[in-house]
Image (cartoon, rainbow, N blue to C red):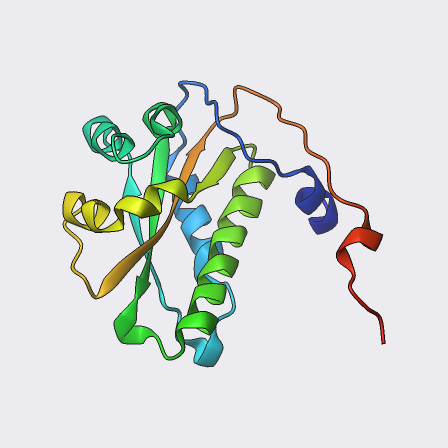
Length: 166
């Protein structure tokens, strides 16, 4: 699929089949993230892959969207590593690029995903549950699995998004 088709076709998938995603594919999803751009090439992202059912259930209790996490084949918790950072705003944008790479790659491989943010209200509890020290700040959780739905979405017209053209 061309990159523009992948971008246009990707949707947030919240319902998953019970099929297991192969570890080699999970590694490639992480590889896609690793190649995201970052300021000074500092690569401020760190990841925790969560496949264990008990960990997913415990994690799901920390958000309103518990069923998504519990039913996903696996999740990736994304962290901002303060030791490798140099400018918080730029670093967080780089982490967003890494996340987008994961979302696009997984879609192209036929794997659904959704970027969850509401769980951030419990970021300290996530770190505690996953035994991650405070040098790594929890910034996102992504759920993955083979889609059991085909969500549709619309976009605003370009004229609604462009403020000015000089």
